[in-house]
Image 1 (cartoon, each protein chain N blue to C red):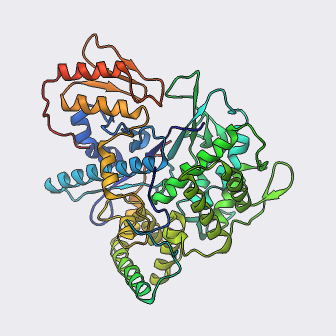
Image 2: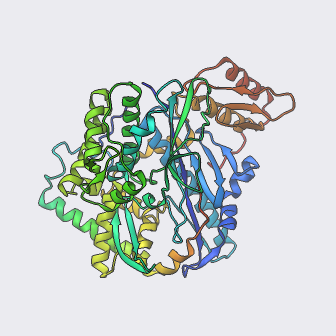
Image 3: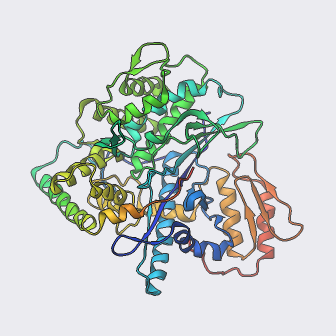
Length: 468
Length: 62
């Protein structure tokens, strides 16, 4: 597909502690505190916002933000960052309320993927693909790319190996901790046996035309450059697969063994057995795909290719000077090394795990990532204005524009409404739902009529602004 | 779209000459920034790091 719609779902970790670090509220109670203003506004902990994103509480008390449909990957990054701000504000409000009640309790929202007991939660990428296209051959080509992509877009982290008798082994820095939580290459499960590609077929659009590719192997990324690369490179690889032409034959013998090996090999050069009986390496797979898709890149996709190449060069040469200021894994690698040296710590020390959590803490005041950004040690590609605007404005070039208009109008006029990814309707008796099955639709007479109906039914044109 | 400069670390930064041509003054400034940051991080790590980590347990998500 030339133009592709994509979206990013982020599950956040949530912890509420006392000043001494001990748990103040159970996750369920903490989530209730966090969502109080959302429930007050939408009478539900599952709402669509003015920017057409979905904000809700997922399984395991994980607050989740799903961006609206984007067809531009910088817009997607802006929408994702807007979600962090929305949740950071909700956390700040909850903390103010708890403090006002005199409670020794503070919420932290962590944009990461694993808690200290090893429970994993996700960062799910969605890509619209053509129903008639190449879905059956897609995993064969996409999997080697996804297995090795972590050397570019991994969030980095420390894992502690287990010895054969179950004791703690040595700790080491890896490209992605999530790799250890992947159990299958392709399946329809999400929680039980987590696959790299999830085949759940919910297109959120005309099912005769579209499929949704659900990639659940990604790490939650703090760096805008890392998040952008996840989408820009995967989109190019999908486009190459969709051409129907010959592709790099890099199928791996064992995707799950490979994903764990790649995560632990910071040189990118460890041999990976291929399905055909040879070997390849993470660097080779990524470089072959980069070279293969290069002729397909247009406009600002050239910048993405250049950045992708820089990322591979950082692994190939070991020269981290660029990567350590731009890519999550390398920023974190440097930080962890500095802190471990300064404090004389082993990588497996609890302080290093605390540092990892602080890196992913979305609190603009307390998080380590924003502190790195303020000092120019992590990228701030998008302007403040753009990120703030994305809190209120839906992407204008997809169906999200219609949903955003309806939610904004309904909120302004105080009209009860229910929307989801494809349907818009008012909740009063007899109201007819409007279905928008084309994810690229930005104008529909039925939506104009619905907006007219909302204005006519409106009771309070200057209702107070919602919390998000 | 996108006029963003991917390779600039700071907002509006546009160092076309690449990252390697840092002058002595800038190197000093960035070393200072790194030290400041590590001081800030020390404060986080010194307050009950291990207890905080143990408190962060949730059921898995998707």
